[in-house]
Length: 270
Image (cartoon, rainbow, N blue to C red):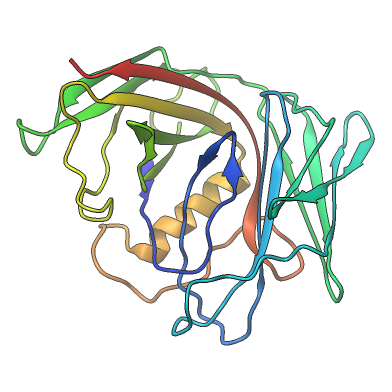
């Protein structure tokens, strides 16, 4: 099955990772501000980043205060190496840590009054996109979307996340999928997006440059993005009892710590 994670209004934004920014906004059910922690480590060369902010009430402005006085460490459990991240330009960043498939990474964030922890494992299976091409929409022959083919290895339990940039602009739709019904098979995934939620951008046109990222993620990260989908309504319609997303951060903070392998593929629409 696969789920589409839409842009939800408005609670926090993901950090800038690998020179890209993925914005996921969440409506909060709490009147008390909470810490929001977003981090990612992958199997590309670092640095890697952790972004920490404080949430606000639904009726307040969207300028979320950045937390710059926390003590943030990431530990490679297999190598028994711990690095303290430095706060630079609004984010915490590593300097020497490397992401390795099969390794588990432990995040610890210490603020003045609380301690938060999370662990995530980069899947050993490193899977990439076999082919990327343009096809017409199943609903409208005049609309075109990028389509990715990839082969899921045999053995249940693989989870994936896809992100798409068109002409350098990240589409606000992140697609998560697993191998519950396609284990060990060739998979074809249409990377559609909600035109209205992406500021009215029309579907892909001739000459557009498309860049797609495929992440192999662990189950906890997959569940987080699935929860975001459920919070916004699985049918893509209006709000259905908004809820705080269930992440893998322990200690009461919102957000997610994502250790993943990833790869990119690019094409130009002709």
